[in-house]
Length: 198
Image (cartoon, rainbow, N blue to C red; front, side, top):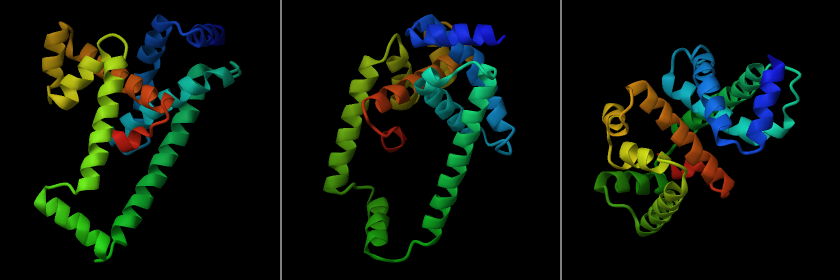
């Protein structure tokens, strides 16, 4: 089995697109289930951890030596991502709990109440939107189109499946692959996808 793992990693390192699809199809769902079992059934956190682990693994592939099964290696990366997500969530909760009624808190509350972004917020939102549109246009295959349907046009997965002529499960898999491709593309350009993606 490890020979198969090493062979797959060798193909991935050459940039073989078919190998990347095989890698994602084989391991994303397994990692998602692995994470789901460790997040008390929180699907959003499990999906985030699995996607981050896959993304990190792609960048770390040259370090894989085949001493452990590929899934074991991925699961360890996923454990680290779960720990990071848990720490970030705890920090966010502490930050929110400690917000006072200072000027910044009032400014944010007024912006939410008016639903009108402040000038520098509009500029930042415009920059983020421009970056996202450029990267979406550069994604391979129909990845950019699928993400635009889902997040810009608010299509359901069922509607995307109909447009692709595929099953709902295949559309969900295509959407997950597209999200991973987008995040990888943003990180490769030096952007923090946490700040750019909703």
